[in-house]
Image 1: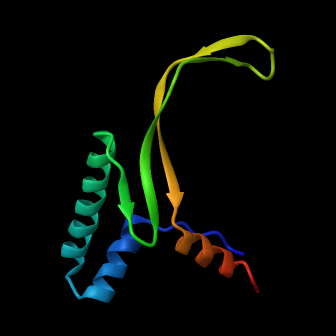
Image 2: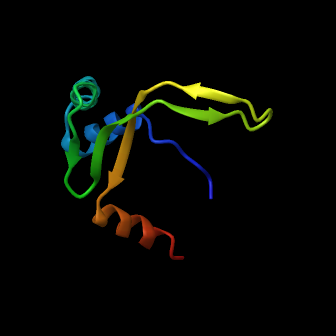
Length: 100
């Protein structure tokens, strides 16, 4: 199976074909949606897209890690990480795509 990455341009092109906006308007729309999602996540809000999934930011506390090569203990600073939890519909749709 050939691996293909879905890009912003691909999304813009899909909006252009499906909705009928111009290519520039489609690209602007996609950028606007992604900006709104990013801004909400930066503020710590969840982004829930029905039938797709939920994006959220999780706070990870500081901890002590270990360098696997040397075994040396290394402090890991607290940080925020982005998480995605797919909806049940998305999980089912992906799973059904595995059946050939």
